[in-house]
Amino acid sequence: MRIKKAVKFVSIFLLSIIFIYAWTWIPVTERISLDLTDNGPIGFRIALITDLHSCYYGKGQKSLIDRIDNEEPDIVVFSGDIFDDKLSDENAKIVFEDLVTKYPCYYVTGNHEYWSGRADSMKDYLRSIGVHVLEGDCERIEAGDHTIDMCGVDDPTDIGYYPWIDQFDRAYSETDPSHIRILASHRPEKINTYEKYDFDLILAGHAHAGQFRIPFINRGLFVPDQGSMALYVSGQYELPNGSIMVVSRGLARESTPLPRFFNHPEVVIIDI
Image (cartoon, rainbow, N blue to C red):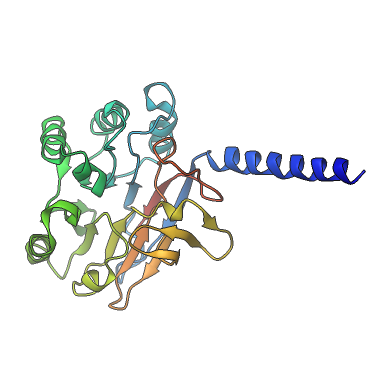
């Protein structure tokens, strides 16, 4: 009798784990509304895509592309690790080549692009198809009566700390205090650097929400560069200088050795 109960318990436990894993594999769309001006909403929508790692989202990446198209964003921001250092570039290229025909697309590198040893050639490819590659510079976007300074910096993995800081300085010097100032940067843990600059909004990824996300308290079990019970893993955070940072859980699935638990891959939609 005890053996039967033990077998039943183990079976239920394993089935529950399988169900949670399968359920967590399903992507979601997260929506965030931010008031970054004194005049209320300006009607500008950003689709934030991070950490795709060239993973598969159906034939022609249709399920991911449709999810983005359904939101009708004004721009799409890719905050790093869209390519992978092990998987083929094909799935990432399909997404870029489709979306760039419909929306202005802005891109910054992540650590995996550098780990691949091909970050420069990836940037060249993206420029060739019309993606705005940001590496310490800004581009201006008109949004009704408002202007957005869309800035970006490379991931510091390969370029080193001081060249990375130089990118911040160059990008920030191109902004106007009367504009909405947005920074795309891969890593959410670089708070000490971000708080030195007066960006209104910082868009990041990298953490994958720790792969194992702790339900209800929004912490990651273990996150590279943040450690255990990491804080900056998913959603929006107000930094000490008043900047808002939005961190995406990303879209990585089959590229990672550990499964995601309580941690759906996501497209983040930000309404300003």
